[in-house]
Amino acid sequence: MRAVRVHQFNLDVPMRLEEVPDPRPAAGQVLIKTGAAAINPVDVAIRQGVHPYAKLVKPPYIPGAEAAGEVLALGPGVQGFQVGQRVFGRALGGGYAGRVLLDARGAGELPARYSWAEGASITVAYGTAWNALVIKAGAGPGETVLIQGGAGGVGMAAIQLAKRLGCRVVATVSSREKADFCRGLGADETINYKAEDFAARCMELTGGRGVDVIVELAACDNFDKDLDAIRVDGRLVVVGTGTGKGPKAEFRVPGVMTKDVRVLGMAAVNLAPKMPEVLRRLGSLLSEGALKVHVDRQVRLEEANEAHDLVLSGKFLGKVVITA
Ligand SMILES: NC(=O)c1ccc[n+]([C@@H]2O[C@H](COP(=O)([O-])OP(=O)(O)OC[C@H]3O[C@@H](n4cnc5c(N)ncnc54)[C@H](OP(=O)(O)O)[C@@H]3O)[C@@H](O)[C@H]2O)c1
Image (tube, rainbow, N blue to C red; front, side, top):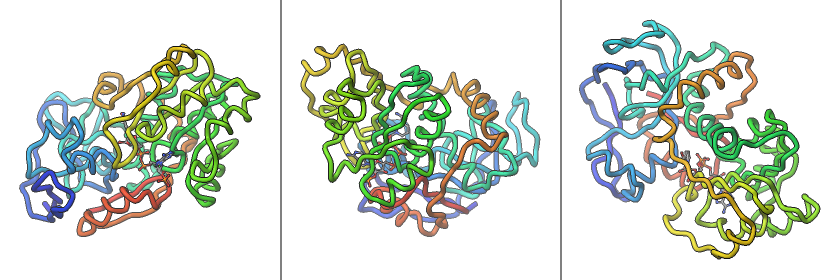
């Protein structure tokens, strides 16, 4: 099969499109013909060698944490899937290839109304947003949720899920186009963080109380100021450093203490045991067509390097995907 491979942990060394043997499904795995794979910031951070998950792979390796496609074969003991079925899910090994192995526990049926590109963009964005809002923050009706980085993959998902939970949603963006995009997904308010002081705006929007929950996708930039935007006993979910940023952030320790802020970390790898339940819950929303998945750009395997540059630039709405 054709596959894009990383040969060095260094963004200056281009990934290469190569011919490699097809993978074979082991126990608990589903082999699919890749319809599309999403490009995620984690793919870029691992390739850079700065992400903790870089320790889990050895070059040359195929990047890509999630994909959608048609089932070709099932590993021993896998139940609940059939050859020919349309599925999406967490990739084991790389999605930037003609065939990819999915973790059966982290895969689900893809309703016909969603394209391969849309299906490939569900697991990480929606699984992460669910983890942040439902499992970690326990966000509920009437609460104000600030989503830092509203127009990216996780932001797109978090806006929609927070609205479904009955929350008032405030999303931060860097442009008018991104503000319109977030409003189109259901955001009640947007703040251009480049032009305005987001913490002061959050205080204004909540009558001086502060927001109940923050879904923080760019913690290295925002952690300290989040402490001015959050209410006493609020929940600050640290989801990401920020695409291409980090790993360190400075913050005022008293800012956490004086407001009894509950800082909640999370990682996709720790969510794995809960994925069947998360997918069941997301699956019912998908079958109703209740979740919008916006794919801004679809590139070919030949364009993988440009796609990583695009993801680092932030100049896209929703998701960027790659197709074999
Ligand atoms: N912990 C986990 O399990 C988990 C899972 C998924 C993702 N993540 C991490 O979460 C982060 C976001 O992921 P993603 O897929 O949504 O990334 P993405 O698609 O690249 O979107 C990131 C968004 O953040 C915006 N942004 C950048 N700097 C910002 C700032 N200072 N304040 C507010 N917004 C800012 C970007 O737009 P502008 O540049 O135009 O502002 C962009 O729209 C990444 O760091 C990713 O690695 C973690």
